[in-house]
Image 1 (cartoon, rainbow, N blue to C red):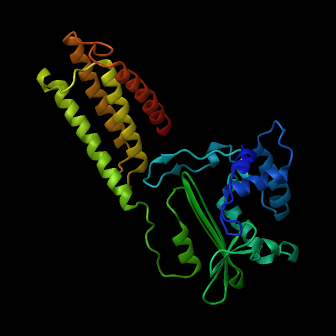
Image 2 (image 1 turned 90 degrees about the vertical axis):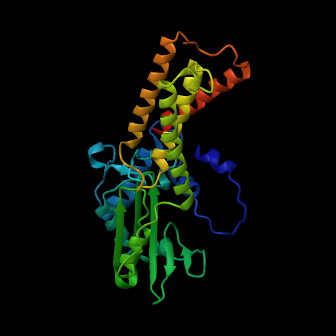
Image 3 (image 1 turned 180 degrees about the vertical axis):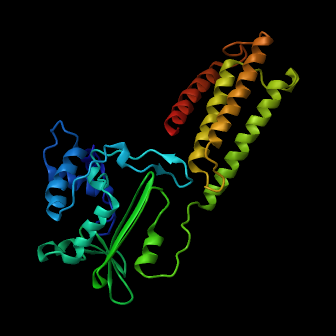
Length: 325
């Protein structure tokens, strides 16, 4: 997959700096060479790094395969998140170590032998104050000091490690949340008295969250009224296909809302309450159809193209909802 991605990649503006996870993934593949091994690449890459890099630095090996050794991961809004899994892209961020061992590794930058200085030597200029070494990013500070740093983030984790060699200072901030810790880490490194609270949402996210919440609540209320009200209240004849499209629509919207809504609006478990309400409304609707003898797969007045479209909609939204949950 990595080789195929690299072959398909386009270099739009040669010579410009672009941070590339694909680049690091490809470098890792090339360093290990043989891609025909039956052992997963992520395991082979971890073993090589432990043997050739960490062990000489007296940093003990670590296996993240034991669930008890992994902290729980959380999305920006506090929802539990599943840790990302890597294989071919292991060199771009799949290695896991205890925070203390990451700092032990970063502290080596204070005492690198000359042959390793290439890692922290500027190789390309990113901006007036930012450069890139081999793997590490470098920043010129106002007092002529150099900040060597790198950050990272996956679905439920955020990290930042920075080193100022002139002060022999190493700082790392590690969080089991997708909320960025960059500003907090920089405030500690640069000795700022405080840092701004991390920004977790944009105005667009707020708009989407409020609109989705209103739509979900509105759906439940309207369908609760129509399911329990007189037949004349219905705007369209109910059938099982109609019920199925309604369910997939609203569960899909609930799953998007639960993943993307700001933390202020997100209450753990609220998504499941919405799902339970939808289940009750749907059950009431089906019972009413049965009592009136109107249970049918689809109405005879429904055009064929609508039946096909409804089937595609149920399959697509149902699959996406399953993946999101």
